[in-house]
Amino acid sequence: MIMKSRSLLAQILSVNVLLIAGTFLVALVALDERVANAFRGREMIVLGLALVAALLGNWLLLRRRFIPLDRLISSMEQVDLDTPDKQLLACDRIDSAEAVRLEAAINRMLARLEGARRAAGRAAIQAQERERRRIAQDLHDEVNQALTAIALRLQASIEHAPPSLQRELTETKRLAGQAMEELLALARQLRPAVLDDHGLLPALHSQVRDFSDQTGIHAAFNVRGQAPRLTPEQQLVVYRVTQEGLSNVAQHSEARKVDVELSFIGRTVLRITDDGKGFVSRRDGGLGLSGMRERALLIGGNLSIWSGLGQGTRVELTLA
Image (cartoon, rainbow, N blue to C red; front, side):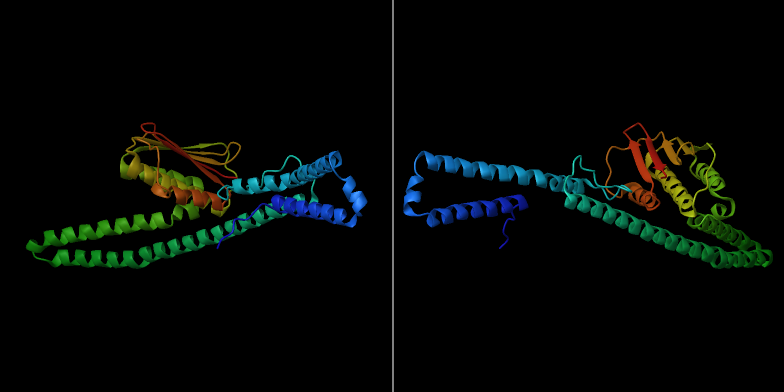
């Protein structure tokens, strides 16, 4: 059977009431009969009022002492772990050493949790990118080489085949070449060599240009300010968020134009804005937004999204 728990303030008050009542009864028993008979009428009323005043003062004092704890509990309930570096709301007045220690301990615990989550996230991103690099390398070195060998064999067969088979072999060679191009494009998406070889800005230029060529959507890339030195994890997150954002534009927005802007004025901010149909509500994880938001959190950034029916969509990544 589950019993409803009472607050600590109510429990302490209950104990104090019992103690005061017990003390009063013991005092009455201890007094002799002549003194006990004197406690009648107005004296009993005065004594009762004194007891009520003592209990009320006790309640007011205890309630004041428990206010910091109530504020800490309310602050803990408002903490959003999806927001990096979120600390407890500092109480206006904390005159209890225990409450101050509790607040500091909780904030230290939140800082440790955030640090552990970021470390685990960085390790996850690094492991994911290593796997992407391995798969891309295998596609380029093994599968692509096999298709190249097939294309060479087909070319040799075309040269010695009778005219009735040359057209079929030529078409087969064309399909093999198309498969090679698609595999190379997939390898570049898995791990863009331009990001490793030339840096973030050339990689984004190439990504936006390829997006425009493949989809027919007019896409522009602009840079504002002087680029600071970004960590490899930050560069990778900016690239992947841009990749996912452009993929959403191509698949869902029905846009005719998209602008990608990377601003280094003040803080590093990536903005992806389209003129598509927009949306009002979305399921959690829909459109790949949860993955982009998680990547942003792993580097201490923040992802914001604005959209409306017929008003397009803007995705904004802000680095800390």
